Length: 120
Image (cartoon, rainbow, N blue to C red; front, side, top):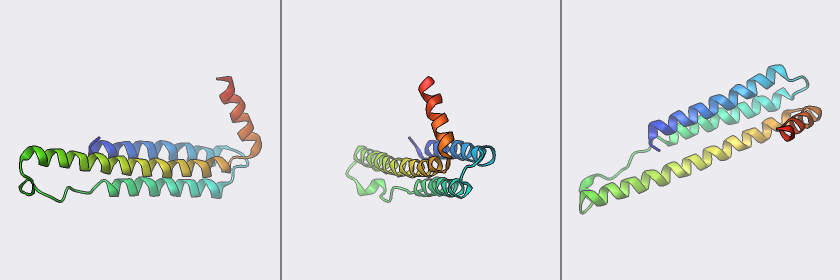
């Protein structure tokens, strides 16, 4: 995954999650709006942090290596491990936001959602 693809992924996932949270904020009776707002803040922070962290550049040039092949391998490994780490952190923060969001639902609504999920 390259920088552009990762940023699009983070934006799309964050927008989708926030869309669902906003919909529940306004349409679910008895939902804890403070917790939903907190979950939205966590999600926005995760997207911003992931986008910012993806702006890292490889700090060594081709002349620092014995040959162009070694440079290309090292650069590829660097970016692969970087984006794996950023994606893992991003997903953990999104999961944390979803836990906060799910805790905002009233108990009867959670039970209804479980029954609906089991019917599928």
